[in-house]
Length: 278
Ligand SMILES: Nc1nc2c(ncn2[C@@H]2O[C@H](COP(=O)(O)OP(=O)(O)O)[C@@H](O)[C@H]2O)c(=O)[nH]1
Ligand SMILES: [Mg+2]
Image (cartoon, rainbow, N blue to C red; front, top):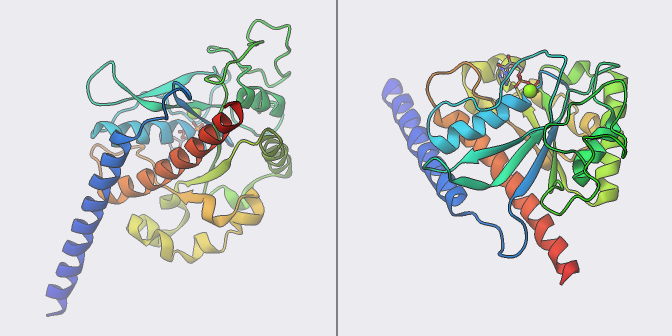
């Protein structure tokens, strides 16, 4: 009887999650920007290196394409980092979703990105292909500086990406940089949220099953709100696709939840901006 009950619960859980995922993908495929606003919604990711920024872009691409794909190179190291816009294919080749991702070089220490460059990225001053330099921020007289960014170059939402297992060990200089970046985004009126990656590595019960994420005492104890300076309601836990060969609805559902919130908040920002223009 007990086994039968467990099996029934698992079966119902799978049906609910798959149904939810299908609805979220439908919503995503129907999503478009208001006519006359922008070509695409620009999502700017930043955070420590190795926190899962590239893997998040790959995970979104995988969920959107319904197969594992890795358009953004994921790695945990690398000395050169290029500013690049990632589009997400929609169905057939040559068609793309109306949102794009940029990610920035990792934050930490003297080998980390200068916070000024994240400010430049928010305002659209970084040209495609710009090579970040940890030693000095881009200067308006430099080649990679876009002097006259249009609204398509500007970020619509800033997303801090941190891995759950790294949160307790974030160093003061990284936390300071994050604070400077958040303050700048507030000044530019760019909305912000955070993604908590690698939840599988931070807690044994989540490793066992991703659906335990909201039960995890480890994650609850992390003081995320005070560390990241972002309200808990705007921090989304995800497990990226990083070594899997197949999609999994429990992973999809968290990625889609985070993505939908990013898009909705970013879109509100775009629409608010055009109210002033009108
Ligand atoms: N276990 C686990 N590993 C992850 C996750 N996301 C990324 N990784 C791994 O963490 C490493 C760094 O990820 P990457 O996306 O390159 O980080 P980035 O430097 O922020 O772009 C890679 O080896 C990934 O495979 C996750 O959610 N769970
Ligand atoms: Mg990366």
